[in-house]
Image (cartoon, rainbow, N blue to C red; front, side, top):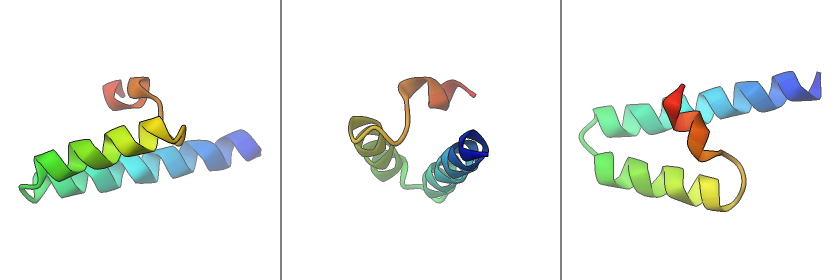
Length: 49
């Protein structure tokens, strides 16, 4: 169950980052992604999915 919650949180974070980039804020989206990776919330491999 815990893994499912983490997967859902990751999906939501990726969707948020994609939405920010789609709105023309690609630099900010990349900065957010990098910060979330740095803090251990996301992994770089998350971007490949």
